[in-house]
Length: 194
Image 1 (cartoon, rainbow, N blue to C red):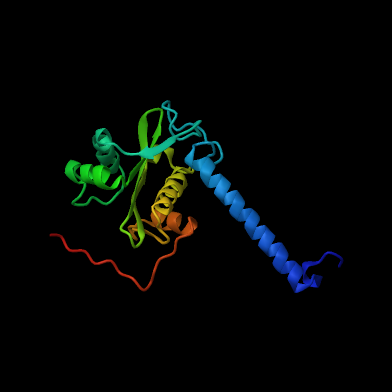
Image 2 (cartoon, rainbow, N blue to C red):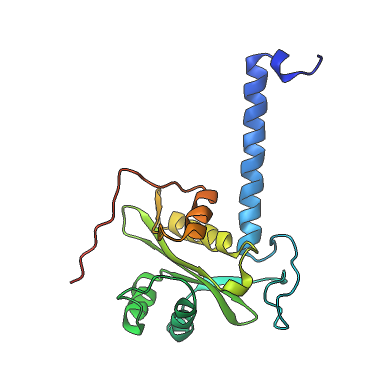
């Protein structure tokens, strides 16, 4: 059959696959920028309630946190299924914000709807506390936060990203896998509280 890929020379298939991969990469980069700026979302959804949560909204803003945001951040984390930790307190968040500028927030109409901690220790970039308000999930915001975190870490010189994910949260594991991350079977996290 004419035009059948099985009949094409190997070099043509390789070039075609390369062009296709570059096109997908360009689309993904453009889509990430649009998501970060709130200009792109998932397919429209019907409103879940009168507040407008649960349907596609016009935009969101992703920005670094300030200390005035701490109560709202702790409130969002407390109302989500995020695993509580010993650093879920104002003094730890103040240090994270003031010394590391490592907390990213997503807002819509001045209301906090998502967070991501994205820090770099000079060796690898670490991301955790990806939390999206349950009323605005499945609109691309988590991916936009991760893209913003990756961009921030790359600007700092990071060449390797890690995500701390609660492995009993199937939705979180699925998200990070879909975002291009894979579990590292050679590593286990050990924790000691001082």
